[in-house]
Image 1 (tube, helix red, strand yellow):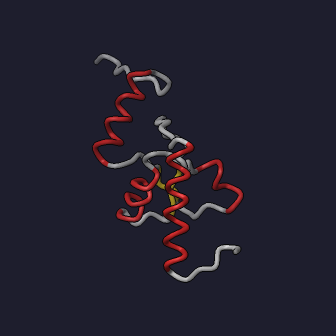
Image 2 (cartoon, helix red, strand yellow; image 1 turned 45 degrees about the vertical axis):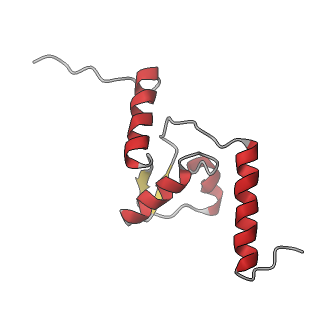
Length: 103
């Protein structure tokens, strides 16, 4: 029996396979058995990732306690302009729901 050779995580081929997987299933989150503590969030979540919302949806659909982005090789962050647009949308949503936003 020959030994199977895997694709190294650091390789461009692996990154391309992961991108195809993300596009196909909507994300690449890794399940966690317990919720993140506040001090762990920055290490485990890429909130500015272009696929972050899909990963949240996927983890909710699978009813996971929590998930991590730490092992994902996809690095497709939103641009500053896209972040600004999303923030403006969120402010409108919160205002429409009657939340006071430090004004």
